Length: 113
Image 1 (cartoon, rainbow, N blue to C red):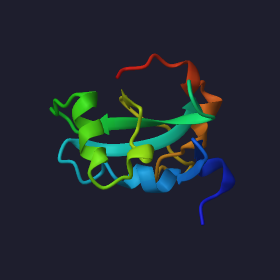
Image 2: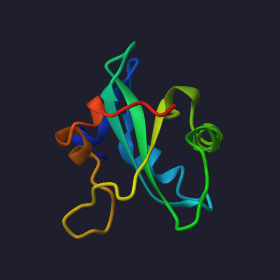
Image 3: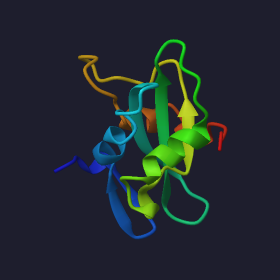
C-alpha cells in the first residue's frame, strides 16, 4: 500500500502515485518519471507527470500523455506533463520523491499541455 502522501485525490478516486510513475518508464525516450497531485481546476487534485528524458530524446508532452492513456484508466491519465532535467529523488537517489514536488511548489508551475 502506498503512503498517504503518495495518494492523489482525483474526482473522488484515489490514484496511487507509484502506479502513475511506472506507466511512462517503458517509453524509449523516458529515463525517470514522477507523478504528483497538484491543485486541480475541477477536482481536489490533478495528476502532474514530471519526466526526465534520455540524452538526445525529442518527445512532446502530448505524445507522453497519449502513451500513458493506453494502460491507465482515463481518469488517471496525467493532465499535465512537465519535462525536467531532474525530478526530485529520495535521499538514496534510487527513485523519484513525489511529495517533494508539493514542497517545491509544483502547483505553481506553468502548465505545458
